[in-house]
Length: 328
Image 1 (cartoon, rainbow, N blue to C red):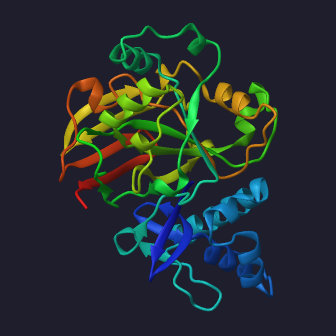
Image 2: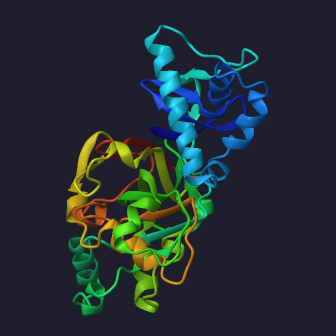
Image 3: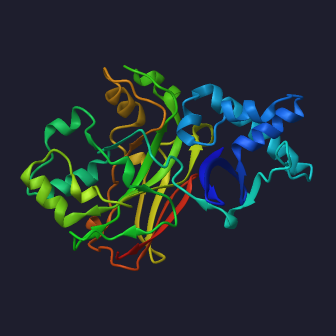
């Protein structure tokens, strides 16, 4: 199932993608309950599947099980030539062109960008005139990001006033759907909801200054409004057979600039979850980023973005995010 947050009529709601349509998850659950004979379907639907992604994820396995029932109910209705409606005739199925997709988790509870691709790390340290520290191979390292910088597909990437070198970073996102603490690797996937695409937009000239001044992870070089693109959906883990074998592509103005694969992650998903959850509870709505693969940014290929460019990120089995770079 491909979960989304969408906007229609000025309201933000949650749903799922079915072919080219967006289906409202809360109202379609109410329709399912009505079919099952429930006398108060709307009250129960808004309790079990509230129209807010974080509140929905707080229900953990119980919410996801309900959503899967809804998905099968709607799919079966379409196969029978029916378009389901809410209990009171509410419209619950929209053509994709008539709604606006937001980031699937518009304000993640926590975002951590890990550094998992060895080739990118080697290139980054070469730029700083340093070898890769042996410590990089001891534990997964990363930095916490600003959840308020997140936007969705088709929203503008606004050029920061303090940079001359703006770059994209093609990244794989892992969405947490179940809380946990001290999670062993063998149980890590029990806590994964699914996967998404992230463009970690970066001000390279500011980043170089920051990392030379204090190499604790970037700050302003990756912390500005509209600087983190996520989407177009969260694909639940049951639809991705092997998350460590997915093709990754970045295009600028239709031209392929980057091609990579999640198979090259040195640190795998269980490594990240085990490390982050040590003596710390991780909650639903947390998003872990893979970091950039080798060749996965303009810095690798020797080209940078300019105002007006349209940047596309694609990961196999998930979809495409597309955004234009604009000056304020």
